[in-house]
Length: 590
Image (tube, rainbow, N blue to C red; front, side):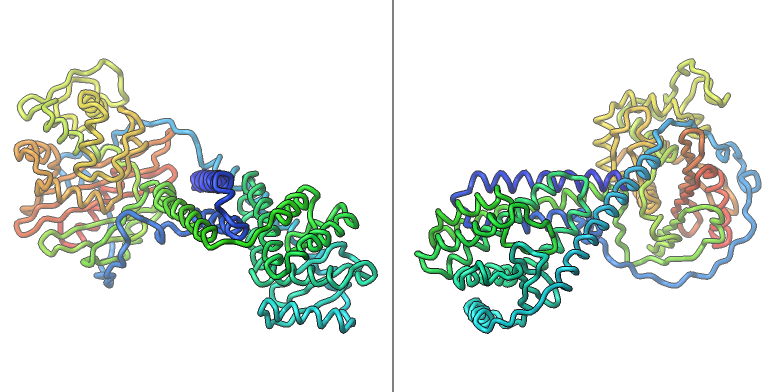
């Protein structure tokens, strides 16, 4: 969802910038100019994190490729209605309560549209800047002055650079600049020889070549990409402005390392000279320019005036601080992963899985089917992607609500009655006193809400975490967390939990487990028992989520299943049951 991605991007970028600025301020004297500049590359790494596919940085259950076999080739036949195959047809009735939820999809569309529009505007501005650079290229004439060209080659040798450059002058520039990823240009103002000494020119060449040496041209493109992606965050713009200043300072210091001490002031004067000639430098983000704003030039001159050769201790301190910030950036990876994932997907790992094409059973629906054969210890799955996607359990959760009620002695096998609260519900079967059996048969929502209220939310969450129920998130509130709200579970997890429930891997009282099993029995046919629970999710009057989960006990084997349907307004638990029964029949299971 875009809103989630937007919030993650805003938080990560803002927090990282704040930390880097704090580190720079606190450890200013312990950081060399070069390493102050290098800190900003850690910001670029942090800005990349929200855009990395979550499976590559997920620190939860690692995804492992599954052994995908061929479909067994079953074909669908006409689906049966509940009355055709079960003796208790009431379980096929869709008992559901509509819940009201804000339409975040609309906000999602608006925010994503604004974000894309902002990126397009920035992209147009970038193209405009690129066209300006293209104009400068077109007006650049290569230098013919042999003395200047010899000086340029000497500077290249001094910096151990062997690449060929186009060195020229252009009437469109007022400050020396370097640009070009594949063909690099070093361009000086027109007629520079009339007002620049050879020493000034040497300083300029050393400065521009240091930009090339430290890949600052490529960095310009990265900065632009991140500014386009994060155009909505003013802190990112501020950070990159500071990064450009730190880069110029680092470049100035690199030049001073190649000059004699008595040349430091002359180098500073060379920079000041261009401020006097061009008080309003061109803003071309794709280029590196010697000149800058008066505020930036002032800071650069102050650094030049206080320059001292970097000691080994300062270098070690700088590296240590850089690594410290690097650890901080790395520590955000699991946080970003958790926020991006939002526990909405289960990382399924089984090498005993058959993936089938059952799409003909699901005509008109987005959905999945998961079957587990206990004797063969094998899964059969339709729609791998949807089978691990967590959605609201709705009434299928009542199985585990009942089990908790029994385990906590809120109800007992002998006495599970709760008096009707007097509220008129849309189903007559709800408007009376209930026990566990009638509440499960008629899917009486208020009964299980009463169980939850007596168990309290904290105990419920601890219980859900203990049995590994989906994302075990009860933040939606005591009455609605399992009704198209915070609690979510995937079809694969439904099947795994049913197996754990059936075999009592939870270690609960056998009597309580058997009591719940008895309430789930739906029908018997050919010495096979069908047990299960439907669920329908209704949001703002629309049925968007249909479930049927359960198991089939035969004389030789037990099969656990979960079917989930997703639709804009036609996903019912009864329809999920019809599809399930058709698949089970065609497989010869029930």
